Length: 541
Image 1 (cartoon, rainbow, N blue to C red):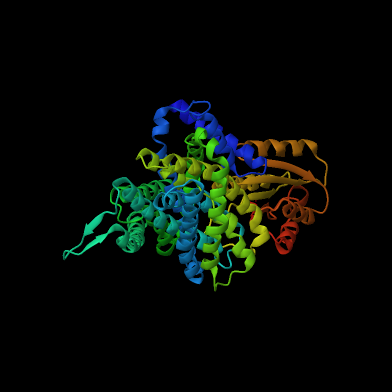
Image 2: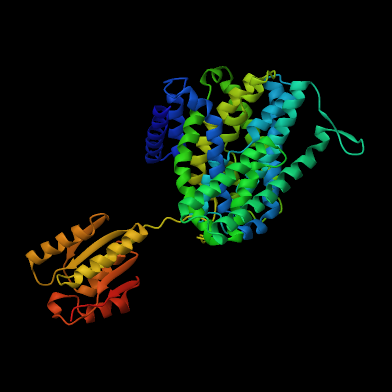
């Protein structure tokens, strides 16, 4: 089992990086290596790991939904609230119906079985859509109109609808009829009549439990201080989020996935600093979870069932996408402030299938539903085609179809590489500058440029300076640069050229100007630099 985990982590990571370097989304490489490692080809993944694939996928989806919730913007959702709500129901519904009607003609299925197939295929993949939308938010694409937020919310709501209808149809086809439910007062209704009430209950209870979980987290982590660092905060938050998902599977009265996303959303409203720390923690968790999710996804794809339905399967997917789902997109954005380019972006941004299809695609076959093999095969085909295409097309077409706006750093993780410039001479003050810049770099996980401007040639002193830098920055990535020219101008030029975060340098003391950066130099840099400057007083008397 441990060897299988090593194979998954190493092969999954490097295959993803190879795909990235070739210009493709990493998940393509991960899915392909999963197929190779799985029982269909290499058969090197332990059966114990494959048996735990559903549980591992659940953990991965919980992580990505927490990331989604921690990235939602309340103001943008309020701005596009009706669009997000319609995106949650209309595209999934129209796609499922279109697939059901097409499957009746192509595969000769009856309408309930065709609709069962439509529910499997119509569900959107949070594992593909969420990272893509968060990436767009971090780059600013579509954020002015809240397009990524609307897609994120709509995706979660659509899965609530389709999973409920899927369960209802599965029960109907397995038992040969619609289950009758007797309510208080002797009123008898069937499950189909109760479907609207079930949807409302799943959504409302999911949001409510997400809010209560967020209040509990704030109380535990901020007010009562049960944890001491961000890692512990992340562990507790992940445990509570996963508990929501598991309880929802045992007591299916609320959407565990929606509750998880709501938990992240309400954390932003209740305690923004805590939400920011957790965002970084879940970003780290996703690095590992993403590998397991997509490698195991590839490992569970049944290649042998694809051959005989390849062309009709692609036709079914095309009908569902280009007829069914596009009608839903049009109706969802009707009357909104989205232009035609932004509506067209829904094609790559809101059509990827992966996680849900992998989780429920095999259930009809396992329960003996007629047509279950066809459902499983098309579910696998949808993963192989729409997941990589959707991930690639989202980033490829966003710059062409969306408008770039200002990034909100309070809603997304923005990676800034901290780089300090240490301007040093050959005096004793250089030790203080190097000590300070080393401390700053360690605190921020940053890098350092050590800059010495040569005006008076003194090779032994420069070599000694290099030795000092190597000793004091031994655990920090740094470059040692020497140049000639006017000292203030060169410091600012190098700082701007390398886009440094701050300049660290010394200020005039009582030593001769030949041996240190004199006060006039530090004053000139301070007055003219567009980059923050940290000045250190000389302690020597």
